[in-house]
Image 1 (cartoon, rainbow, N blue to C red):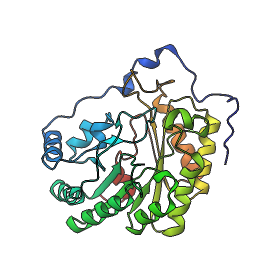
Image 2: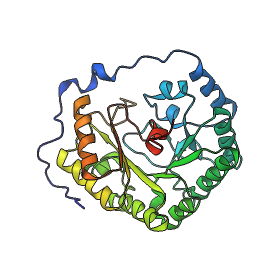
Image 3: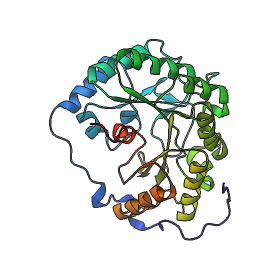
Image 4: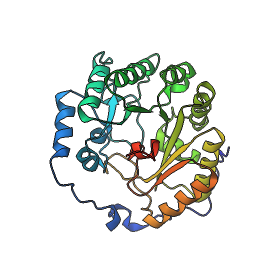
Length: 304
């Protein structure tokens, strides 16, 4: 594991003056049809939150048009202040005890085959919200036959909280490393710890090796290629199965980290091939790739 914080050689991309201008490959057409409205209305009717909305995901309209969404539980206010995330930060309210039931109902009504459940970070809760994750997993299974993927926070280095989520046996346990160790404090804030992020995968693997593990990184924050490859090696060493690599896009130019440079699509193809050659079972690498983008296809590549 490489946690060198010294000078970095050969950046994966050098800064340039046009970093604030979106290149042509990052401009998307709005999907046609009304399926997007159906999904948005259902989410609103059931008083649910989605990371698609609150994180200002560029894939929101595409995913909504396919009648899918990544549900965000435990409210819409986060206790962390990450430098890349548009989700509101502050003091959240108590968990909603009826939310798991509504997640299950949304799964049933959307006809989802694979459900992704994430959350804001809840450092204010003794278990970080782990039991609420468990209840949501159980509710989805009771309401449908969908497989379940969780995208969790780090639970503030609480191994018992991770074990509680694992005990509910999600099909995929996703926890994002986000960036390289040198940039952790800048990108993820003072409470995030790279060593602990890696330990999450070790804990999941040790507790239930049948659960697939997954992680993702945002590129374009100033990382070097060597740093990135070191992180991928660390993830593999801790038992990570699936990987996502995507372009960081600044959701709020007023308060969030700027983009260092936009990687070209060919660079993502090359990095994806390198990750597969290193040993990741499945890799999604591209400018618009996000943690839960086409998650069903990654979890079940041989199914419709």
